[in-house]
Image 1: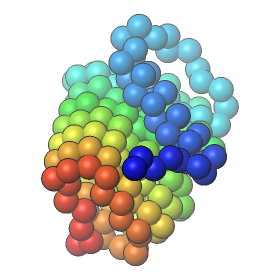
Image 2: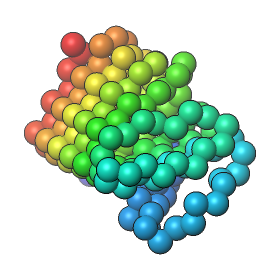
Image 3: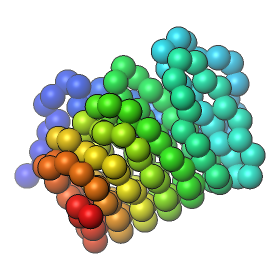
Length: 160
């Protein structure tokens, strides 16, 4: 039977992740106008970086296409084929959508949700929960004792 997301904050976070993924698809058509205060938006295209930032440090990226939006205490990152470093700071939540990414996440994430395939993500620390939906993702966290929810197939989620 299909589980329904009943927690309002989880629904909002998933909505934000879907919006970030849509922004990634539309990045070539969008304006580079400044986002509202307190949020971060970054669009990266292969071998060139265009960033618009307001109020927070943008993730660093080396290739591929990516979009990053911070809403409240949640960082929503959508990318395809990037190598990047993201910062959870002290207790932010992180939603990642995309495929074929190599991500290093510094700081201490409260919760993490990964949607996609063939991602290799290393975390300094995850406190509460890691939820992975997709396939062939390799998730490693160095510290913390999160509840692990592997809702996909052939994912590897380890402390190490």
